[in-house]
Structure formats: structure tokens, C-alpha cells
Image (tube, rainbow, N blue to C red; front, side, top):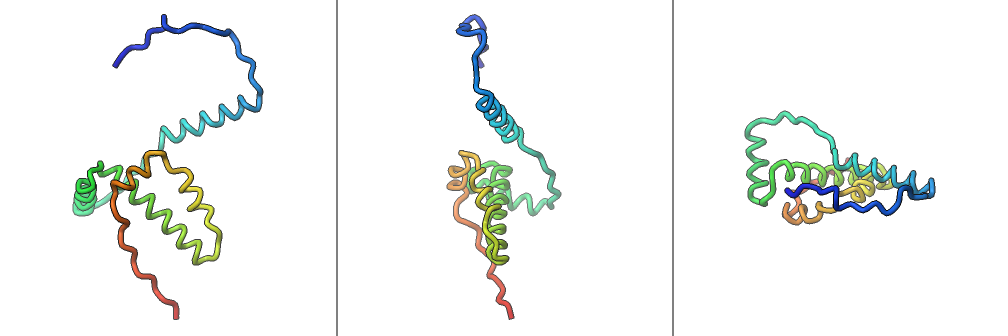
Length: 126
């Protein structure tokens, strides 16, 4: 990796006047970007067979197994939220918000993930 050479920097202004509203917006956007980059970490306790199945599916699709897990869980959660909200007669804000927050690389990863998992048949009331 090339090292950064400070001698290549030219100072073109000592101070930049900035609209306070714009400054606040930029600060907020920087914080949101930092939060997205840092992410969160969770721990799952799974049996060896479960992990082997997930790794095999990921290998077949050509993606790392942790990436595969994130894709499948996220996709299933969105579907579950939408289905539950439809049954409860609510609008779909949670599912809509989740779709908007997807990282830019995700659609490409979804194509690599292949077809959707089969849905369980819904139970009929009464």
C-alpha cells in the first residue's frame, strides 16, 4: 500500500465559511456513515450440522458463509415483517425502511444468493 505524502497537499484556504444548517447536516451524515461502517456484532450458538448446511449453501453460491447468513436472515426478516403487518392490517413502514437502508452492494449479493427459500404454507383459520 502506498504511503500518503503530506508534501503533496496544498493549503488553499485557512478557513471556510459554512452555513450552520449545512454543517449540522454534514455532521449528522458523517455519524450515520460511521455507524453503518462500524456495524454491530452478534453471537449465535448453532450445532455443527446447522453450520455445515449453511456453509455448504454458501459454498454452492460462491459467497462467504457469514455473508450468506446475513443475506438470508435479513431477507427473511423483511418478508416476515411484511407478512405480519399485512395480517395485522398495518402499513409496512418497518419493511419499507429496511429496504431503503440496504447497502449498495446487497442487490449484487442477492443475485449470487440464488432463488428465494420455499415459503411454508399458510394455515387457514377456522
